[in-house]
Length: 266
Image (tube, rainbow, N blue to C red; front, top):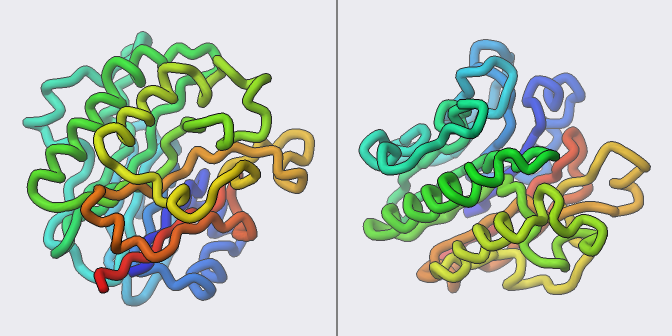
């Protein structure tokens, strides 16, 4: 089972550039999770024969949003946090923007595990969304995947908008305390690891230089001055099933590149 995650930074842009079809042909994911789709389903012309598709678009047009394409039809699909769960948390920031309405989570249930795609809120340059992230979103997401785990193991993937360690960005010293590399955001990720979830890429690859997002400025991608902020994490019970984990920087079309794992229960 090949599971891919890709922040496309606008599905319409990726389609217009002609990047999606070659990617699908070359990689043939069994499950493809997208973030930052920035579109309603009826706004685009997309045809992926053999795939079931599920969309969670933001209330605000052209903003955020997630999607899942999968060859095997899920047992069930839930958009966002279930209402009974979400009411335990507050998702509005200081401007009363409600991240719960931004199409940031989709959960698909399969026989052996759940697959969750997530687009974690950005802290913003002025760090105005740090209180939302650290106090509400990150704890809520952790509580949610742990709740799912009571039923069966979980695979979750997406743009988590944080570099976990100094190995996960090219310039840690100059970026310390800035969005994506604050103590609060890093602690939020560490809490996922401490709760037993496995950063699959680090099972196979150590060291720095492995990034999933690059700024448009200063030819950053060609120079590989980037950040690893896109991840696939799995419940500890699935660790032995993870046969490979990869980053695909050769896939163009977005300022992010896809990440993937291959699962095999044998």
